[in-house]
Length: 118
Image (cartoon, rainbow, N blue to C red; front, side, top):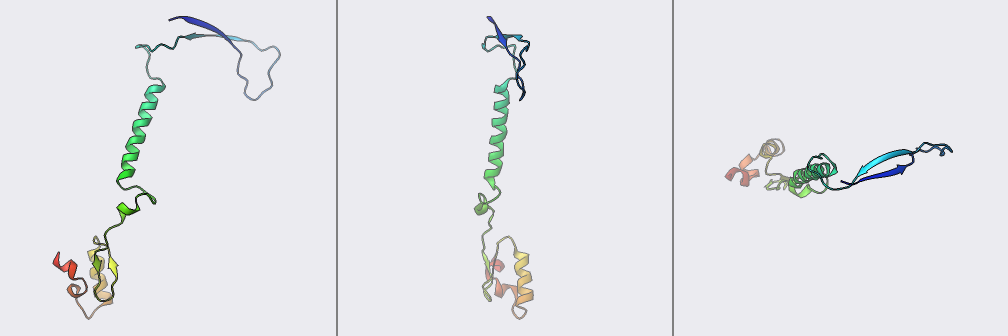
């Protein structure tokens, strides 16, 4: 690999440059890929890309916010025949409690015939 010597001025962070600043010499090697070298930015970029892909897959399954609202919404299949109040199909116990407290004169099978069949 060819060695190239460059004369670089020191980087001054937010300060006025000095009149007598020392110059440093830095040796830069050519940018050929070498098997002996490793752990550069390419590996970091690939790891970050893989992490972001896994995160996107996890959010794609349900997701938070308005993006996953349709996948989180349960089907409102349980509908009371007396008062027409709807319940998600995952809340049979809430529908049973509704029938006992709101419609004491009728039983659960009368209020929710679709849940009794299942």
